[in-house]
Length: 274
Figure 1 (cartoon, rainbow, N blue to C red):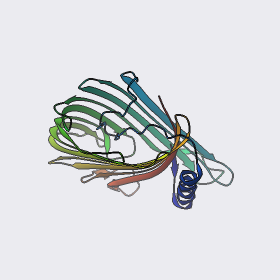
Figure 2 (figure 1 turned 90 degrees about the vertical axis):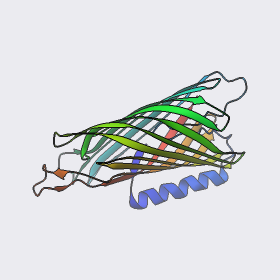
Figure 3 (figure 1 turned 120 degrees about the vertical axis):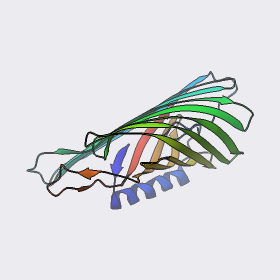
Figure 4 (figure 1 turned 60 degrees about the horizontal axis):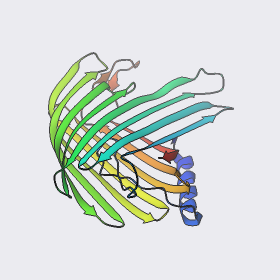
């Protein structure tokens, strides 16, 4: 997945919508998922095995009067057997740029996430879950954060076109700040994922996660539009929003000031499901 901003993002969005309109390729199987591992049981063929997964990646580089490069990777593996569902997710993103062709390229973004979730179906609509999420971001106020949570999930919508899952839970967070301090606290958790199968070849997914404690509330929203290209290969256009309610002072700057509370980026990637 590659960072895109401004006019480039608008051009990509228009191109992807055009692809949705004209492509006759078979649809890639849609799976409801979030970057924070809240995942409903995968929709599989009756003869499919318990294992499934997907990987997505993108890379872009510019050169000339200015230089920049961006790369992103996302992977997911899952095991669905009877009432049990286990999901492992990984993401990595990096970006570097130079002010002009004579300047040295510097890293401007570097972030990682890994998550694990296990679910047990209580009924068709309700399930219990336990999850672990780890974040590391070189350029945010938090060097790394670890969340452990457990709770109840509700599959509110299960139709041919629309799907909606909501999770509510509680747990704990351990965080290391860039200034060397630590932050440990109890948290409440609210997560949701909405999926709309626009057509046999196109899927829209909106994911939202809120993890709130007494010291900080972390909010993450991921919006994705997916179009099948051929077989199990898809193009995915995404927009991610991340927000921390409480941040520390960035003392690495010439004039110290608080870290930005919000990070956003637009991505485009090729995804392969298996």
